[in-house]
Amino acid sequence: MTDECISSIEYITKATLKMNAASSDVDCSGDRPDALGMGIGTGEETNANKTNGIEMNGKMSFDTMTVARMPTERNAIEYNMNHKKRGLALIFNHEYYDIPRLEPRTGTNVDCEKLKKSFKNLDFEVTAYKDCKLRDLFKHIDNAASQDHSDCDCIAVAILTHGEHGYLYAKDVMYKLESICHYFTAQECPTLAGKPKLFFIQACRGDSLDPGIKLQKTETDGETFSEMTYRIPVHADFLISYSTIPGFYSWRNTSDGSWYIQSLVEELNKNGIKYDMLSLLTFVSQRVAVGYESCVPSRPLMDQQKQIPCLTSMLTRILRFNEKPKTA
Image 1 (cartoon, rainbow, N blue to C red):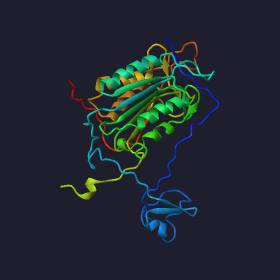
Image 2: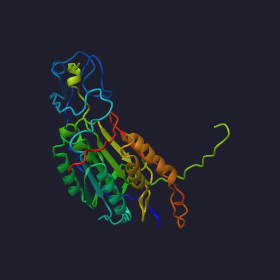
Image 3: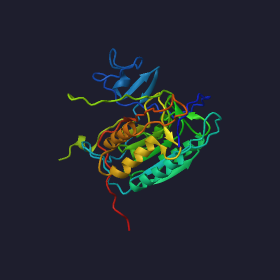
Image 4: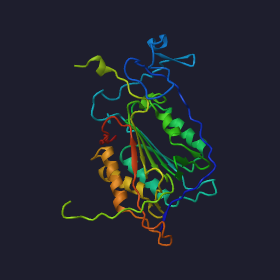
């Protein structure tokens, strides 16, 4: 029973991102973007600015704002989790690779099966994919994003793979997580606009080690128009939970699975309905940080190392899973 991690520098084939250059309303007399060369915010207003457009390099880019159905009241504290369905949960489980330097991820199937059960217990419609090449991975993501999510609370995506320095591995090549998230922005997937989009990433993010530090206790220690319609950023309502911080190893036990997925599953099973998502992920971090330490006595440099998950949240409300009515 050993803990494993891998860090390899491979030839990088970057996945081509779908980039949509859509402009939004710009008030030249007030807020301005902190960027040079935008052609706004200096001098007098142009006719382009007055018509909700921006003149850039002699070309006009008009406002192409997407309009989507409002799933939650404008000032609601919590997300609306009372739709007919919880939503899709996609798991991309990578064990074997076409890249010679990448070792098999022994133990990942344990993670996958436990995560499937946890998602199902929270009423997700779960689909797991094994050892996808990048083309197939994008096909599955595109298919999910193309569906009508009007009756769903949210969507969840888990990726269990090798990774390093901002990249994740498909079976054949590297890619950036942003190329996946893009499919679910409010612009690309309007029926998920204003709804939580959850990403759980079990992967290394570098080759640095965390030896930890010992702590010692001491003795001194009526609806208006603004309520009927409102605008949100196209990248709002994402939450990305990483198994480790940038630049560091992410550990996996060959028998029990990864520390992060073990902790995530335990927290979802025990408190998935009791606490909100950010609280749950705080307790996941606590479990990983306090409850685990690498055991590789044959490799002293890798032995007794620690790990801390981290997250990026663009959530705009409290996310709490409720109990769905059981269908007959």
